[in-house]
Image 1 (cartoon, rainbow, N blue to C red):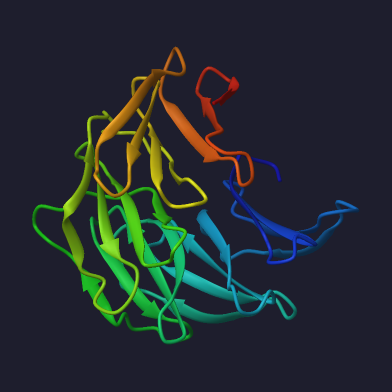
Image 2 (image 1 turned 90 degrees about the vertical axis):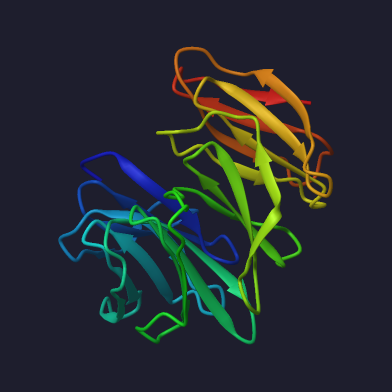
Length: 249
């Protein structure tokens, strides 16, 4: 890549990974050897890239021209375009609901739900009070997904059936307006944590929506990334604009 890398994702077995960059190219890499297996572009900046969970040969990229494009990595051809957003696409999330569905969010403050390989959304989630959601994270049970809403709260939606907003499940107490701070669930689904625009790390209880902890994690800017350790209990990693990665217990 000749410019900053925006997103990276491994395929299902970890043998390959895909990266997208502000140089407008998407590259497919071999994890072990580090060689480039394929290069793809539609001359737009890809903001997010995700493998299709049921077939590693397909991946979807959300672009700056408001479209999500699906590529076949073996031929390099664009197999489908999903073009209903009115602003650049921020996130792509796959959920299991009578087959694979794709949830996308954008700067146009909407969330759209798509069937894979059908270019018309099956559901619009849109509401005059909604704000843009630059980060969406799926609950480990698969039954819910949480979106980092830029009015300083985390909104929760059903991950299947009606995709209805869960008005009682809202997580507040952090300041994120203007920053795309990550949301992370603990592997058992009991806790949810998020970064904060003032450099804090917040942890809530999933069932009772109670703010349990608020740490001063980073200086000089926001805590942008947080990841829960997949095996060790109550271990969280955070990173911020100060260029430091920290481990919390």
